[in-house]
Each structure stands twice: as structure tokens, then as C-alpha cells.
Length: 89
Image (cartoon, rainbow, N blue to C red; front, side):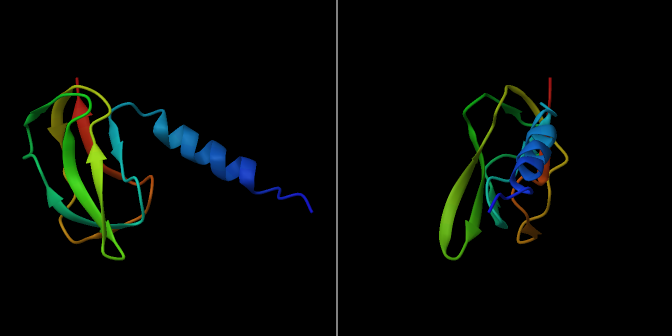
């Protein structure tokens, strides 16, 4: 049986990811720690936060270089691909 929903889900994630300034959560979980502060300069590849789900920690990696803005709070439940911060040029 063909799954007609898969392409739509994939396209929605792709559209969200096109916003180059948005830092997206890599997993469903909570932000357990920020490794940076608001207005810090980050480099592409820097670990900027840690997320936790089911006792497993996953790093959040900066996808570009810039100044970090609009950090989400710690211990909030976040869905995968939800914006958790922004990196301004």
C-alpha cells in the first residue's frame, strides 16, 4: 500500500529547513543546556546546545556562522525541526 503522506512530511521539513537563520531541533526532547549565550558569535559546526530525550543527549550544531539570537528556554519540550534559536549574519 502506498503511503501518500510521506512526501508531504518530507516537503514540510525541507521548507522549514530553507530558513537559513533558524536553528532547528534535531530530535523531539528538551533543551538540557545551552553552551552559548544570546548574542554570542558562533562558527559553523560549533555545539551550541544539548538536547535530551529518553536519557540520551544529542548536540545541537550551528549550521552557519553568525550571532546567536532568540534562544528557547531550558527544559521546554521541543519537537524535532522546531526552531529553537536564530543565527543572524
